[in-house]
Image (tube, rainbow, N blue to C red; front, side, top):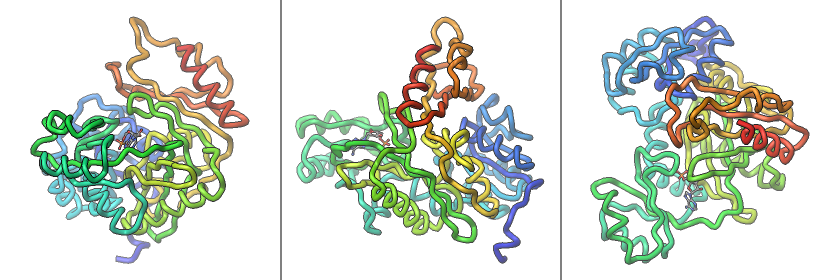
Length: 378
Ligand code: AMP
């Protein structure tokens, strides 16, 4: 099949595995461009179900449901990484999956991801693969404490991670990891955390969004701002890294590369073959937002322009800000230049991403001050 035949034009139906906030914003972008959307997610009232044309409520391991999704759509993409390989294979037999299962397989497993990156010469923190307590002790001897132990699978927002301060802690630290593959990493003394989101089209074209600067709180992304305020050389190298990684993964769609900046040096922390929390501000601030860019890529359409129209800052809204009453939305929105996004989640739990605020201003500093003030008014 030539690439022309594989183009999925507006009017066709997009399938999305996973119906959280990323799936919801993907569905909004798709519907804006005239696509129909079918989402598969195990949760009855998931965020994407409110905007999709159809919601197949099923577990990711349900291959019959996956086949039903594949038959109903022209192309399938995903917002979750922990989809069983058998489900992807069932879908692939009936509809294209983009990015392909190969990229997903690597990015969902820290050991495969680290080996992929290191093997191709991409800069990563020194690491040691851990499959036993003896491996952990050997790793701590080689890398030297402090070091961070991370599960290979199912880890996100700092879950499945533990910082180890001394070799005496090894046995106690290892207990929850026993029986699972893990990676021990040297602690990187970073000056900043950055991310770069790149898109690779069906024809191999590549575009990256401007570099994003991220601040975390309790291991969860808290505030993102752009421009990142780094030297031009760093920005250029980050974009080139994203391009080289996207090409090496042969992916079609978005790839997010999470980076540590140490001095002028960039170190890759993690990859995600999808849209990313740090890119939400592109909805207001870039000429094409990350969700539309992903849609364009997986549908085989030309990629959009990625330049930043205005500096922005984005602040996550976690369940923690819901007290006994609903937050004061009107107060935050009285700040000029502030936009509210809520994901339609009913239950505000601590640490749960419920929505975000985006502020546009004349500089990233001003946008960050504005978005933090708006959030504090909630
Ligand atoms: P991750 O789940 O790998 O993205 O890690 C979550 C957060 O933990 C990162 O955003 C960093 O703030 C911190 N972190 C992870 N790995 C390291 C490392 N090797 N050195 C220092 N901080 C780290």
